[in-house]
Length: 89
Image (cartoon, rainbow, N blue to C red; front, side, top):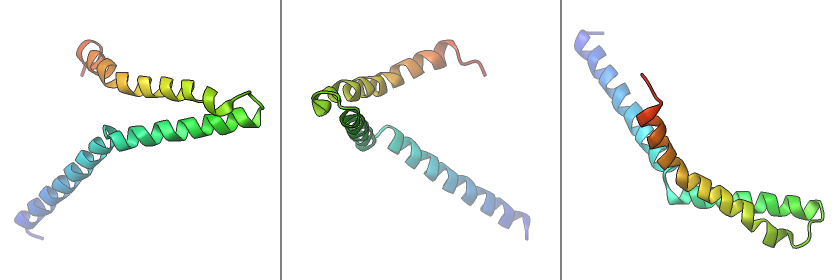
């Protein structure tokens, strides 16, 4: 394999990796992901509360699901602070 071919292959690998990283980042910050996480959190807690006979399990499951939503919405803010003041590379 020639040096030019090797370089082209390396560049293609880097470009493919960058596309994957961009897609992963887009998913991590998407509203779809947040909605799914909140929905699954609500359902899991609702079923758990129902299984342990908590009164009004579906109503009571709203509180932890909302708390989870708030925590996911505030994480980017705290990440910026952490990167600015604590991350030393």
